[in-house]
Length: 225
Image 1 (cartoon, rainbow, N blue to C red):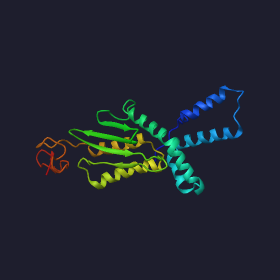
Image 2: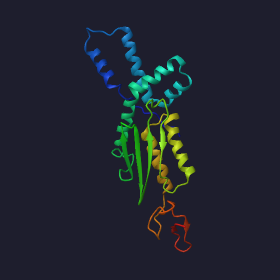
Image 3: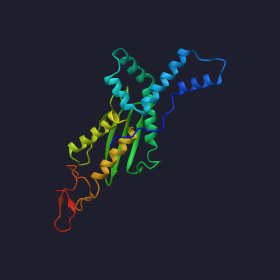
Image 4: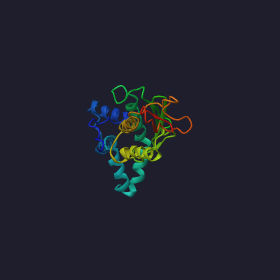
């Protein structure tokens, strides 16, 4: 199901907010019509990208006039993308606080410098990382999702989950918080009922990184084949 866009619109960028407040306080210094139009346009662009990122990206990709396309791209890169990425990372850092996940089962590391979010999923004695990298023109351009460990799961399944993250963010107006929660649900479901091997006492085989896949006909426990 498509992720519903947030009903709470984010605030405008701090520098624009300060200027708008100053205009409100100083009744003797009314803005010119052109300046007011500019401020309203900037405010509308910012709020639209924050609330409907996929739709704005789709407009920019398919319908934005060619003579405006480069201007919009550069404006998002220079003035909006960093603030949007910071908002997304702040929401991720507090995900465990409002019950989105258990802090012990999912660890979040955010880097504003590298514009990357590293999520570590922990299950029993093993863990897996996924890195979501935000481009300079995010959300006009798609995120990149990489991972070095599949926790013994089939490559096709892992690739499908990676594609789900990109799709949620690029086509369904989802947030990075939504994407991480979805990725965790997929892993929770995959590991539901999986217990450590009764022979080596590990969930993953130390050589093949496979899950217990052979069932004992007597005790019904699964062990590494």
